[in-house]
Length: 117
Length: 157
Picture (cartoon, chains in turn brown, purple):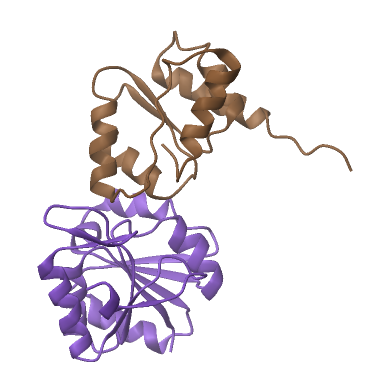
């Protein structure tokens, strides 16, 4: 879940690169108040263990996800979503949500490098 | 005078407020007025997550708001006040006369509301409340981000 169209672009990029079109659902916060965002996240995570990726480590998306899933042990959250962590995630889903979230955090962080001078 | 912005926004503390307005106004404190959030510790922690280290955040109920607002206008802090709903805004304005301008920053779709602007949806009763506020001297405009033009109340309510 991200601001504006970022989630849709990331999911389309994952599909373009991997062919995977069933691991990820793109959700935007556009036009939604907090209550609607919470309802949407609760509905989308209802049936199965889920990792929710959000963009900013503070903000409406993160607040909505925490509010909607704070009593769900089978839902884990990752902030600062980027393409490398999603590409890795779709191939490594056979673990618990918490393990997948921890792995995504490591992969996403290690992909950020300052290069060249 | 240190109330840099009084903002009505149902997302309360989020990117537009902290990054957009916070930087433009060089704000160093956010005052969140909401009875529910002020009374629930985990909700306060949740909103603290969105506040960068160089900003302070303070929470107040409507009953506490007049005293906190009085202290705020006397302080040297540059403060953004955030309020989630029109009922709370009206109660704050009735209880304190320091709020003279209100920025409508985001009220999203809800039951009985119709679209007035891309980021403002109001019911008939909410429109009436905003017009009432303006009739008693509170200037009400809509503006989601600081680079946008302020839209007068008469154009959306």
